[in-house]
Structure formats: C-alpha cells, structure tokens
Length: 236
Ligand SMILES: [Zn+2]
Image (cartoon, rainbow, N blue to C red; front, side):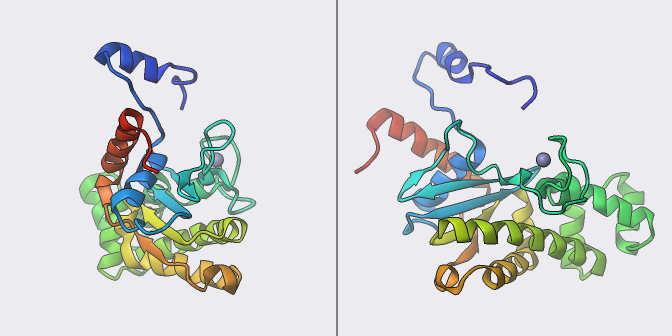
C-alpha cells in the first residue's frame, strides 16, 4: 500500500483513542467473522477468498489464522494465472487480480462495449460514461452472453489458483466473499467445477465451496472478535 509502509497504524490509533488497538488486514478479519458466526462456524481449516478491488485470501489452519512470516500469507491475487496476461499494479504480468477483480472487470466491460460485442454494455456505457462490476453482474443476470463469459472466465482463473491451494493445504471449506460475490451462482459454479476437476478426489470429496453467509458484515463481526480476543483472551 503506497504511502503506508511502516506507518505505525496501531500506535497512532491507540494514542488517539487512549485504548489498546488491534490491527489486521481485511481478509483475515473477514475470515475470523465467518468462522465465528457465519457459514464456517463448524470448521477449523478454512480458506476465505475475498474478491473485490483485488483478490486475497484468509487462511485458517487448525482453528487459527495463519499470517505467515511477515504477515502477508494469503496474498493470492499476485499468483500468476496467465503467462502473457495484462500488467498488474505490482509490476508483474498475468497476476490473478489483473485478470479478475472489480477494476479488471470494469476495464473488460468497457472494452467489450466499445468493440460492439455487447449491446447491453454499450448502452450502459453511453448512459453512464463508465462501467463497473455492477453492470457486469446485472448484464449476466439479464442473460447477456458477453457478461456471462467474463464472469465464467474469471471464475475459471480463481478456480485454477484455488485448486493448487487445495492440493497444498487440504482445507475443509472454501468461502467466497467480497464485492464480486454479487456475481453469484455463475461465479460459484465455475470455481467449483475447476476446483473439483483439478484437485484430487481425496481432498475434494467433502469440500464445500460456498458463498459467505455474513456478506458485507463479515469484516465488522471479525473485527469485534479480534477486539474481544485482545481484551479477554482467546477462548480455549
Ligand atoms: Zn500482481
């Protein structure tokens, strides 16, 4: 995050408010929320994938969030999903989030509108001047083939990366959350089909891949859990 490197967020907030402060990244907090009172209440090994402006995942192993050596575990948005793909904000090419994220979808939708591939998107672009993931979601729900194709292509790429993670970690559930979860069952169906096809049956035999139950509340619930663990300790 340019401009925020080494900024002492925790100390600044603690000084400002005169109380202890817990800081964590968005997807770890969402994972905690979903695990505490969402769809993942009964599991101890969980991957929570947040697909929004970027893509990241929270990793919970044996009941605890795994943060890695420098706190950046789960940064799957920069795993390469296509060798000659578009240039990513990180400077590399073909990263997962350069191909499928809110920003990438808006860009692809505008390109499709300008190329005349989708009448529906062209109309929206003319009316609004810019397109977002919401237009793609609405288009897909209305049966627009180009929008459905974009969501499917994105789901396939997410699925390819997740299939690798499943083989590596053997989670007992994968939860999909974030703004692009609004793309709904088309996205979910594509992710499921790739993960189930590409991972070994032993790992996927009882692996639910589901949408977040808490939706936009996952982060707030998780942050409350984090604060409560800081104040009262972690329940045994
Ligand atoms: Zn990248």
